[in-house]
Image 1 (cartoon, rainbow, N blue to C red):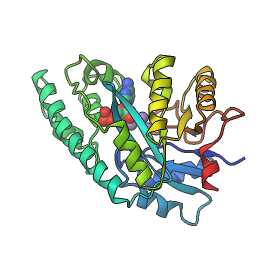
Image 2: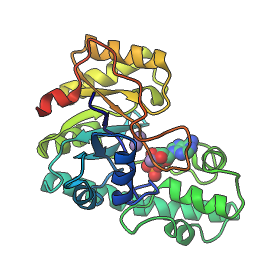
Image 3: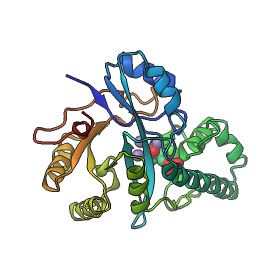
Length: 276
Ligand code: AMP
Ligand code: MN
Ligand code: MN
Ligand code: MN
């Protein structure tokens, strides 16, 4: 059976592997079709494509766009995109600008909490294309403010904590329209992670569908089997495609591995049906 992993990150966002190393690891893990879906940017795709060329793996161009929806951050995957599309790239460029502004604010807030040099510190962990909260977390761990990245998020980077800055990301409408302009398919990433009630999830999904979104990521790395079933049912009821992806970021996370995913439930329509 073909192994699909349609959600992964490289150093072009907050992953720890280069696109080449990521593709190499995916091949080792038996992945046949891999999507690189870095946050709010596509800078890793050219290298990943090159690494996949003449290898026993197919690389799907993707992106994971941060969206603010009803005061919550929601992630939208764009799969099978033409990453050279100018509407998409213009949108993503604005998001990168917001990331720079936000990073400055995070650093200012951390300075007020007695932690100096966080901006420069975080930059040391980031490539020059994207700065995210994970890079701040890595700086804070290195300097002994917390034992691991997870603890930094809890202590510093989430709502009501000293380094928190609210996201002002793309609208749902914009994210879907950029992905569609680039010829790709828009899917709601890891829908179970937003702590939405069943009603709100259906509300988000129907709004998303009206805007031109086509699918739900029903299987995500480290997900409870019950959640998979629930999401598959939502997808079926709302006539949406489904997808599966590990959301791999780093070999340091022993719980998430490329290609290690539960099977999509029967009676679902995998997004790759559109690619044949
Ligand atoms: P950003 O888009 O810069 O706000 O960062 C969001 C990223 O931070 C997510 O994609 C995850 O990679 C990471 N992240 C979010 N929450 C946590 C957490 N509790 N522990 C570890 N990493 C997290
Ligand atoms: Mn991430
Ligand atoms: Mn995400
Ligand atoms: Mn992701």
